[in-house]
Image 1 (spheres, rainbow, N blue to C red):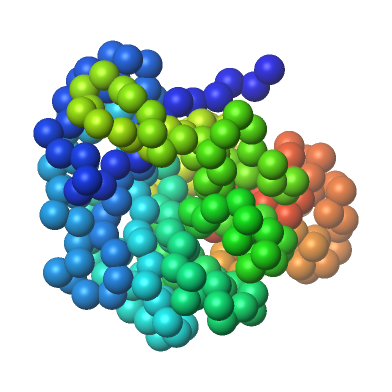
Image 2 (tube, one colour):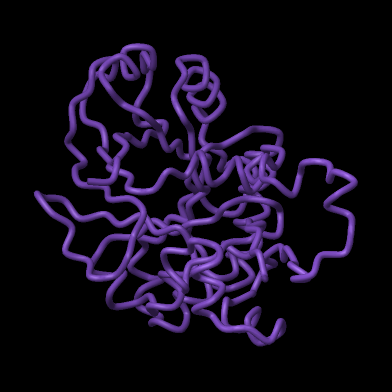
Length: 275
C-alpha cells in the first residue's frame, strides 16, 4: 500500500498551538489559512505565527486562501493578495483556492470553473503548485472533471470514506479532530501524494529546482545525441496531448518514458523527456 501522510489545517480559530506537540503526535504536515477575500487586511492574523512555529517544529507546510470572489476579476485580485501574503516563504504542500460560498455555487458550473482557473493559473504563473479545496458534493456538481484533474485536489467529506470517484491528492475527513498541542477541535486530513518531493524537484513554492536539469551538464552530454532526446519544461496551459503533437510522438510514449501515472495530471515546471 502506498504511503499516506497525516495532516491538519489551521486558521485564526486555532490559537496558541504547540506545533512541537502536534509533530510529536504523528502529524506530518499542516495547511495554514493565509487569508481570505481580495484585500491586504484580510490576511489571516495568525498566518505568520502559525507558519514560523510549524516550520520550527519540523512540520511540512501548505496554505489555503478562502474565496469570496463574485467575478473572475475578484478571483484575480484574490490571487494577487494571496501571492503577496505568502511571498518569501517556502511551502512543501500546494497553495489551495478554498471554494465554499453558496453564492458562488448559485452561479453555476462554468462560473465556478472560471474562478478556480483564474486563481490557480495566477498562482502557477507566480511559481506555486496550485490546488483547490472543496466539499465533495459541490465538487461533483459545480466543477468539471478536467478542472478537478488539472490542479491539486483537496476534497472535504466527513466520515469513514471519501465517495468522490475521481482522483484526488488529499482528503479532509473530520472537522472535530483532537490533536495533542491544540485545545479544541481541528480539521484532520490524509494526503496520498508525496507533494514535498514533487514540489522541491520542480523548484516551485519558493524552492530551487533539484531535478536533473538543474545540474550542470558534463562535456559528454553536450555532444550531439543520436536519439536527439529533448527535455521539455511544462508551461501554463500545456496538455500531454499537445506536447505529444508538437514533438510528433504519442501520449502513451510520453507516459511510459516519464513514468507518468495520470496523463491528465501534469504540472507547471515538470520536466518531460522526449526520446
